[in-house]
Image (cartoon, rainbow, N blue to C red):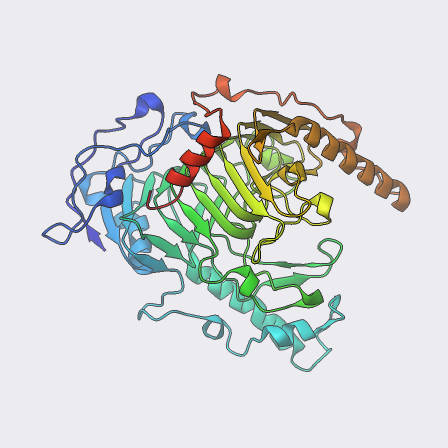
Length: 481
């Protein structure tokens, strides 16, 4: 790691438009004759710095960092040291990533794996301790108690290794076109004023994922680690990043119960626990199942109600099977995003609810208030309809203006109403059959009045043709752009 002698950018030079990132021009910087990255000479914008992150005083990350708080990092240890900022982690700092940083990198440089974290752990043995995949017993086989303990300790050791927390007042920026965080669980925990730009973030593999036979109708695997997670964070801007599963896609995972592959990933970018004033722009979310979760539970109104104000614009969601995003509580603005998927994709087949599958793009959850505008949904293959666009999880407020399905105008408001009515009827039927109380949201009716308008909160300009949205997103979204 080097503290580079870069000249300080003008303090909060973009305050008038709400967002700035110091050293943004380092995106294409190469080594100088002294071996340090070339110094930026002017700020350069890659997209409109708008959205919820422009409010609440704006988001500038480490724009006010003095020259001694500029860092170039190329290893896990250097990234952790840069975040600590000489013992002043919350002071402004700019951290620039060169090349690939692997979260599994040990002190001596070698990469840790499953057996390093928990010698003797075997997922096949772990699975064999569930009778018919439904009931765990420590006594099913002599090794079951040991495997249970190894899974827990291995998971905790892996978490301690790969989780790197960004403190407040930080700009984390990738240098060039190949800056990558691989197997890093990048987290924000009560941090504020943080920007992340021009990075590929490859989701960590959870070698110790757990099987929950009671999760859903058929049970589910639950990975623990995200590519990026925000917990009680405020004023966050994620821009021009690429999120994926990297070298470990789920379709290449081992086979588990019911012939299904073992799910070794959690979310790509999850935002929880009262986080607020966040913009995700010009980024890609590729080939993943549980893409983005907003709010962690229906019972968390004490944490999330009135918070989770998030804007998504000019992002590409390709083969993102679910949660793009799934929203609870939040006032979420999603506009000019491009959603792509196919029923018959050989690696990521997307089966919508109408086709008997779980795939969807926007999830309207409990007390969510989604304001959708001019999004382009491209979904192809046998039986493909706009049904893929929305799944309902108890949310009765949703509005869309001007979105398209396969290049033609589509009525997402009617679809959202139908999805809510179907979910409501199913919940009432289940409550009657089991003699339990129906969820409180079943007393509500669907409405397109979400109680807020983004135009009253911040400035933005939406493209109003599907061709324009497609062209801009495909040309500009993602790292290295």
